[in-house]
Image (cartoon, rainbow, N blue to C red; front, side, top):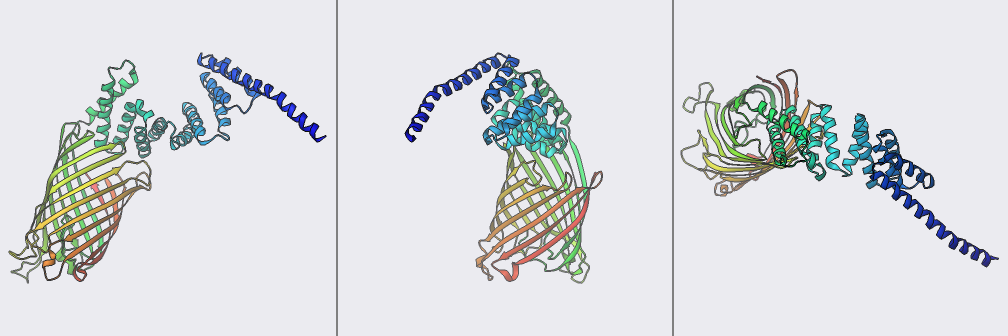
Length: 527
């Protein structure tokens, strides 16, 4: 009995196999015929054929995909959306990304932005048509006036191969986005990229009227930005300082702190002129003034005022690679007693004269990453230096810095990093040194207007010739942690504040080791 059952079962399988193969063969033939109708743009017939096929084989993914395509061809967007919805159920991630992209295109066409955005975001995150997905996400954020998010997606679109064909229009919207963010230089660069990209393609008969129109609009915007601009600002900050410095903020000074606490007022004035950034050479002369007033009488001899004239000259500021020269000087005065009249009141007298002169360069590594470099000769003169001896600080040196900025539309991720080097060679041996520095900063958009920036700066200084002095060799490690915020209050007024902590460790700890807390709050008026 058992043997008979096994033989019957084996016979039924053998007889059924050709029938099963025939059914499968019929389905494959039917799907091929439907595909031919689709290629011939006979969408109604294709839809009917795959609909009949799906009644026989409801789980046939290829047939359902062809059904969605034929529905799209017939402008039956809701039908296609329903079909893609069924395909998404149980689809593997690779397939799901493609279905989400198609759903996004349908919802975008229907002006259902919220749904389109979620589907485009899924496709972009999965890396499917990343250039196109980010392009549409950028356009939707642009239309919503979410400028930072628009910048994030538009710059991302430029990094994908499938976004290359849309480069002119992407650059155009990106330029407009930068203009809305107040980044004129970046806007100019993108407008020029539109002009250059379209100009390269003008010989191509396939270039469309839309692309030509984008170039025309970009050239109009470039003309509108081809003008100089004056600027001026006044800032007043109220500050608490747990350990008053014995030098003005603008001037590096490797001497000990005052070891005095004080509330203080800090006044800053800045003014300048920037020539047209659309010209081959942009010139920016400026002047700034700052002064602090310590309310603690014991710290009033550390009141300073500084005057800083500066000049920048940049060749092709709008180009992907641009460079120029920077020159500035800082003249500082200190509120002090005259050594010959120690019983008199404090008066402001010259403290230092320093400067920076050297080349600067910047380069757009990718649409999201900008790098910059600078190298300076740094002369220094301190008026209170003795005529002779190792404690003299006047002299000169060389300083260099490399900076990289990452452009992001995320509210919490807009980092910049830098590394630097300085060689300082004053007349006296005590303060001869070389220093390595580095830092990172990140700006967080708490709201569209309220910005917080956190930063960490580290400087390691080796006073390489200080070992010949009686105090022994000096090595310092300085770390500064800072959080700063700003918020535009009303037209032309911006509130700002910051909190910082500084720790300086030194091998000569009895003199140079210190900690310092500062906090300040104030406002800036822009003329």
